[in-house]
Structures are given as C-alpha cells and as structure tokens.
Image 1 (cartoon, each protein chain N blue to C red):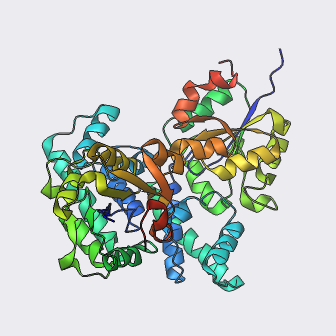
Image 2 (image 1 turned 60 degrees about the vertical axis):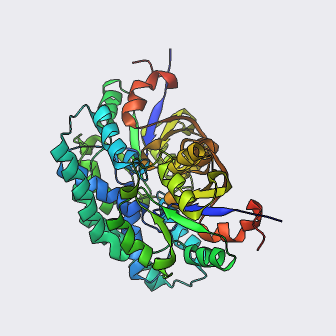
Length: 224
Length: 224
C-alpha cells in the first residue's frame, strides 16, 4: 500500500505563537511612518506577502508610499519584531507533531512568507535538528502567499506532488495558496482567525492548535 | 411617532482600538506568573469578566491560582496595559458616531468589563464631554460580561427598556450579554473576531468599524 502523504507547515501562528507579536510590530512600524490603520486589519493580513500588504495599505489609505518609506516600514517591523522574539514560544504540540512525523518517515517542510532573518531564531526554538529540516522562506521564491510559490517549492524539495501535500496554516492566505498549489488545506485557530473564515477560504478541516492536529492525524488518513 | 431607541457601546475593540494591547498585556502578566497559554486563547476572552477569565485558565491548565496570584495577575495586566495606553487611538468613526447620536437626541452609554482605572484614560481620547456621558464600569455592577448586568444598568441609567437598546460590541461576550439583557446585539469586526463568530453568538448585523455603523445606521431603523 503506497501512501505518499507529506506535510507543509506555515510558521507564524501555526508552529510558533508569534502572530500577535507580528501584529503589534507592524502597528508600531506603521505608527512611526504616520500611517493609521486599525489593528484588526493588520492582524487579518499577517502571513500575506509584505509587498501585497503595503499595496493594500496604499489603496485603502490613499497614501502614496515610495520605495524608501516601504523599505523603512519593512525594516521597522523587523526591528520591532526582533525585540519581541525572545518571549515567543512554540505552540502546544508543535515540536511533538513534527518529531512524530519524522518518526513515521512522513516528509514535512516549513514554508513561510517571512524572511530567513526573522524565521531562523523561531525555528531554533522548536528544539529539533534544523540541518535536517526543509525550510522555504520568502527570499527563496518569486512571490509569497497567497501565491502558491512557497508551497510548490516545498513540495518540489520534498519530492512529492503538491496534491499529496497537506498544507497546515492559520491564515486565509495559507488556505488560498494551498488551493492554488493544488494541496489540501488544514486550518489551525492558533493565529486568531475564526473557524468559518478558514473554512470559507478552503480549509477542509480545522483544529485548534498543533496538539489537536497531532491527536487528529487519523482524520487525515495518517496511519500512526 | 415614538422611537425610544438607545445605544449601549462596549469600549475595547468597539470604540477604542485597544484589544491587541490588552491581549499582549495579559500574555505578559501570565508569563510573569509562569502560566503558559497560547495567545489566541487570551484574545478570544478579552471583554469577559476577569474572574471568569482566571477560572477558565485554572480549569484548562489544571493550575490552582490562589487569591494572591490572581490579584498579582490582574495587577500585572493593568500595569502592562497602562504602559501601552498612550499609543491607543479611537477606532475610525467612533467619536463622529457618538457625536451624531447626541445631535439626534438618541441616548447612548458606554458599558465595559474593564475598571474605571483603565477605561478613563481611553474615554478621554474620544474628545467628547466626559461629564455628560453615561459610563458603566465593572466596579459598578455585581457581574461583568457575559452576564447582562452592565447592559441592564446602562439601560436603567438611560431610562430605556433593555429591549429598546442596541448593544454594539466586538466580542461574543457582548453578544451573549446583550441576549441575556433582552437587547439587540450589533457586532463590529474591529476587535478581531470573525463575522461568523459574532453572528453565531447573536449579532443580528455585523459592521467592520464604528465608521461603517455610522453609514449603516439606517439599517437599524435610525432616521438621521
């Protein structure tokens, strides 16, 4: 019996409890640029490509952000986030789930719209051998989520067809990118989206946190 | 034609863009007590009575929090929040909406599960005459949300039957308390809940922010 299942995990809000720190780091950077955006609108865009994020901002606010202020914004977010990174923890069950998949010989990867600079210190906290991990960051593909590039590249490196990959994520951008990649999206509530938002974006199943996905692996057809 | 409509507004996430600061302030206070809770679970409880919040924590974590550590937790949250309060702004349209209701002679009140200490500096930022406002805080009733006490007391002070009051809030605790008070709940997305979460909790209409409720007042039968 052949089963070529593989898993692709988003990082922020999926493996790491880092979404709210990203939200307030963006809010801080926007404030420094004099841009007023209600914070829940920032929250709903975490995980989306930074380029799309600033385009959406410009369209909504009517502001023109030149190249320089966009670079400052992105730098401001990264700096504010790095100040908060020490307090960030993995989500319950994240490390155990990944270790279990490794033990079952089920390949898995991490694919994040974040850059290697902010992703690396968080991935270290999972306490797993980083040198044996497949990690795709924003700097390695042409377009971040909700484009499918990150997930397609992850599937390619895992040597699995995208259709055999479960994409696990906490945001609607993960679910959209999963659909566009031809993968099955699994939603987690741990990024702060509601259940229905994820289902409407294409999640075929929603769990609370990685620990609940671990318990529910059977529901995805994983024999373990 | 008599119309005795009145409005009762929640504060955090409804008039003020303060939910995410509350979330990270609680996370900081919990961390200081050595209690690990994923942050989205804190978010989903903002607006709920602090007593219920710590009882839920104890049930979930299996920890016993004594009177002393619960007091420290609550103090820790208030201190962390006060450090962030300077950066907090009203949500788009909040002040304009309230001023418009006043101009229409439609009575309105603010009813919050927060204490006067944290509520007062935020209400000041609305830039409206505070001495003419009806404000009910947690210290003035026996039970906070999702019990109906805050809304019942607000209706009493406005001299309106609860059934004539629209309760505007961003959290499911507002919507539950509105139902229990016999009022109609109106949801706002600006606290970071999803549309469906609010509808399932009883919101008969959901707007994005106070500015959208202002535009949509007609949909509530407000002739203005």
